[in-house]
Length: 284
View 1 (cartoon, rainbow, N blue to C red):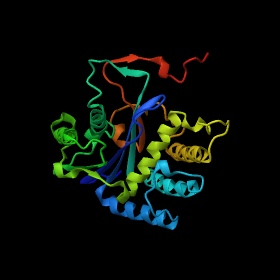
View 2: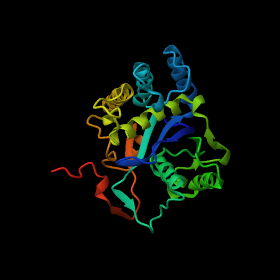
View 3: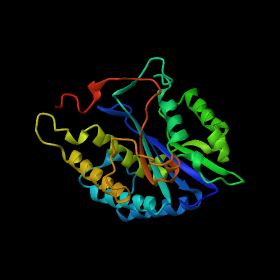
View 4: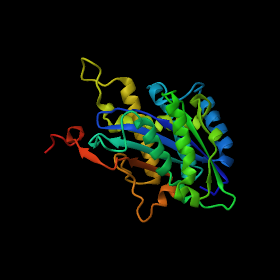
């Protein structure tokens, strides 16, 4: 990704609860100079494929899966070209925060979102510009409309005082930390599809059967097909990519900024293990 004077991050969240993994958060970062072009191109592809509404993981069916593949492939073309980057964060149910952990159930949603923004993209490693780098944060509509959402935006604004953010000269403005309608943003729609596919596979929803039968439904089969397509796209950049572990930064944490696509399993500082939520439970 070339150095820009301004970046936009679109954020979404998916399953809060899952059989094995939970609290799925995702983000896509794009340079402001590339945003309009990519948006127009993705919208044009959607129109060409007669996908006139919003594309979402929940809307994947056997009738539309091939069309979704085409849109997703173009999304990943932009990732490979270095024009956008994607980060996915989730928790493993085996890791249970202790009661005195910094994560408490009442504020868990926003606290995890805060950690995602602070760490997932490696923003402190953005190439420093003397005049500063502006950062705009756009979130799919929050489920919580209370004052917690406004407090959350205030905490994000405070990241400017973080040593890493300050050293990188990152500039945030309250009016550029906002909720947006995903219907108007194809980048956010593509993120929803990728994020949903990861929760789908990690929580083994691809194995679900039609009630009372031993057969899987057409929609489940179509979703697995799209998931496999997405993983192939990821592995064109990172061979043998493992979706269920944190992506290695190898030699330096600065790779959190430079890598095109990453997963991160978030752990609270103080945890207990509950292996009832392990896929290996009962295996020999």
